[in-house]
Image 1 (cartoon, helix red, strand yellow):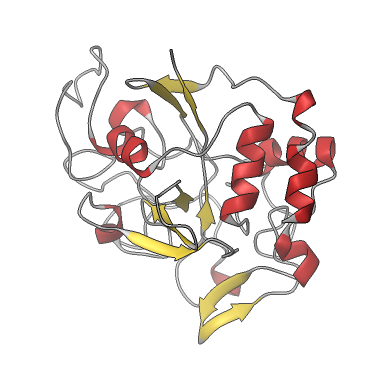
Image 2: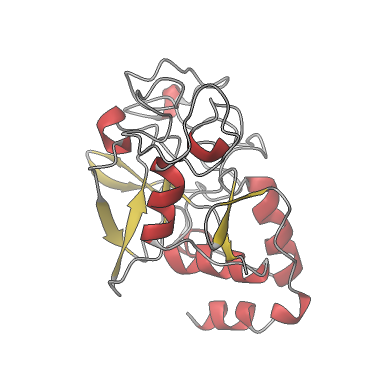
Length: 241
């Protein structure tokens, strides 16, 4: 936490929230998950070093939780990776620090669910209807998301050779656009959101490691806030006045 406090003290160099956000009602949210390339700019500007880097590597679930040497946000699977992949192996507080540096924050659970399942755009196009509450972030079905099965999407690069399950994430913004024009609110990677509990925080949306049911609006998952694993990422939000 001391390292993160130093990072937050650098907010004098805050980066304004990017234009690539979707306005909902009273807030705006990133259209994509935060990528390795985006997080790299934060790390270079602040000298940030993640918990996974300091401890020797992040984790994946195999025969129980397994630490993987060299698996960090820069190299999610221990090898050079596409900088468009979502930034993972980051704790809730590390994700919070990045969003604060950008002049933003993590979305609340209520905001995230509004953005993921309820269409707010008056010009949503033929696939979505304003005011409609959908069961999946992709609409009436999970098709087009990057989940373990049932979604009909295959990432361009597979990490199956180092995984016991699944093939890994897709670059941000490359799956099918969903509700509110957002990408990957369902699957790809879980997303940290700012829920009410202190020691544990909600991770929303499911991931490439899970079947489509984890994307469903009735599903909910909670993890310790210091969790740093290969299939949890995040996106930022900001207030709109």
